[in-house]
Length: 116
Image (cartoon, rainbow, N blue to C red):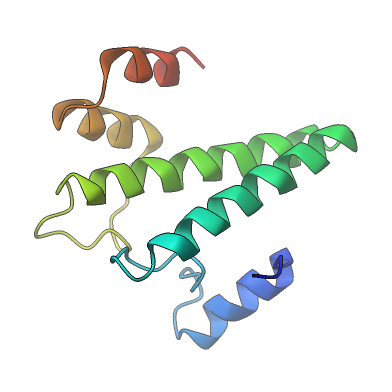
């Protein structure tokens, strides 16, 4: 899988018919699992490059996006989105953490997420 630029990700979103939906992060299914993991790795690598380049706000933004996607993947995988549209919700980062805690995320992970 090739690395997408931010412009290419936004272009994917535009072709999906919803300017806030990026096709690289579709609602998760078994088939999309590998693609999601690849996108998480890509976000992590882009964040590392931003940090090394001194683009600290970009680094923070990408790491927050990484964490948000990861939390949503966790929720989806544990049935936390049953009956809900994970693409349309407006959950804050704190709400995502609380939802993950509610469905059984390890307390040490929850504490780490809240301490940052």
